[in-house]
Length: 112
Length: 113
Image (cartoon, rainbow over all chains, first blue to last red; front, side, top):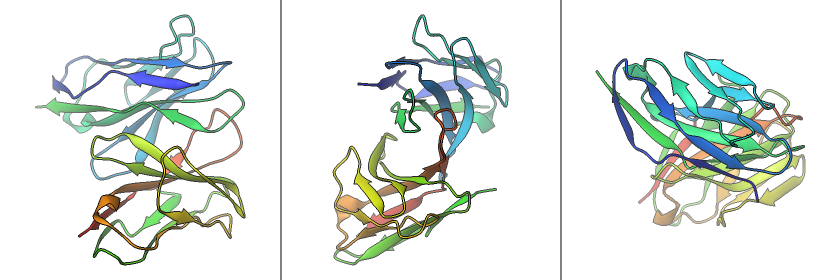
């Protein structure tokens, strides 16, 4: 079945460091891919998405490129801030469906 | 601003009590979902609905029940709360289309003592 695997955390970085959170997927057809962010005590918010191969999603300095050849959707940010501390979830929606399959989440802590 | 609302945000309740967690959305979405989030952060789908009078159990077995009498409202009920029900509960909704994703509420953190 469809699945999402993202790197285990926690990830701890210093402010202004480069961030990569790896995400790979298994799916039939042509899924859409998403990154969600969950700040402490809150629900999940959509951070960015990509709906077809080679699309790049971007928002708030974060980027991820839909790589069909490597079945990946890695999240990157060039310079993290303390305010980026949160849990990040990679997800896919199956071809022809709205139902999301989530990864297990990666907790990011950014220290000043 | 949130278009999907969960109440209460926090709830501490005694064992054996009946509770209902409320979830309402103003976007006219036909599909709604309940997730249980454990302390390890992983999300577990416990119920979903694809429209009025339609409810299904999710991937994780749950003692809770849901109803969908109105499009905008998807409450979750525990008939007899137990400490094992202590968790964060997240409600979400989605519209037609593969590439739109979900809109989540802020969650209810339930503690059963």
